[in-house]
Image (cartoon, rainbow, N blue to C red; front, side, top):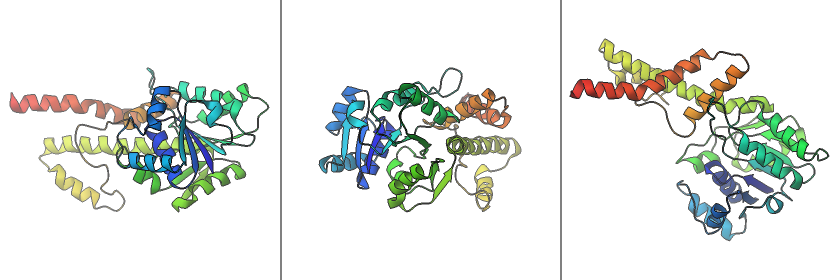
Length: 304
């Protein structure tokens, strides 16, 4: 298939390289011309084990190309993934400026009947906003919008892309969904089909749940100190429960990285926007914010 990936960040580069490695003709688009010129020379602005070799191999084979021009990258593409950054705004909600700008820019160059897929982590309802932005730009064009959230860990993104636990496909049009089935079929992994709104919420729900486990075990660790219990033994007992498992039960300085803080804040902000007070998620974030100050205070107490 001919695929376009908009956004040459961590998710976009890995997505483009993996689809090319699976035999597709992929063009990765980014408006940063300097970055694009560097990528053409295999200068990668991120660290991801195996990515450089994969990109070099597929560029030499002609399956992976880079461009800074929508007029060059979009025409002829059967599927266009939007994988641009959606940073957290001052109000804690996801900033969709880049997402909607990409939607407006790609619309005039899109082939009739092409599929546009949001790969970026976006709040519920973003698919509708992408559709509206495209329709405003090209009201006569026929296209479909879907959601296919990523679940990639930095440092293991290629392995996660090639061996996902599941592929979530948010799309109500059968023909459009069939295109994504064809694209992901070589992975031979479970595919879950749902509406766009549900697919968008899956990513936030997954990351927020994992963040909750981290805040929970940190709270249990604090309780162990007060009660004279051994947190390592408590974790051993918890993790042995098949209903719970051992993952994300490591006490420490709290969760960080590029996803958990951003996604928990975005989900809390989106919840408030629809009038739901997500008190549990607020507690998760409050516990996490206390971790570093608490650890510093503990060092002062121990060391003087």
